Length: 85
Image 1: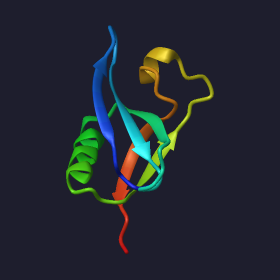
Image 2: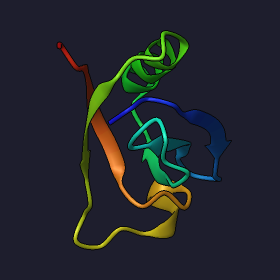
Image 3: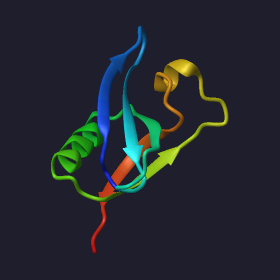
């Protein structure tokens, strides 16, 4: 995934969550929406974004995902790795 992102800090009454918007290619106009609940993963995303680096995103969907689990995101990111070319 090309990491051209927008990280939106949001929270709800019970759990904090951050919405992240990804583009899958440089020329794409479409953005995918995910959420990040882990502060360490959030910091990695911020660093990758600053450096405009390409990353591999690992995400999951629970069988039942309540709206407050992800503040409106479609999936939860649990790991990010820089793409080594």
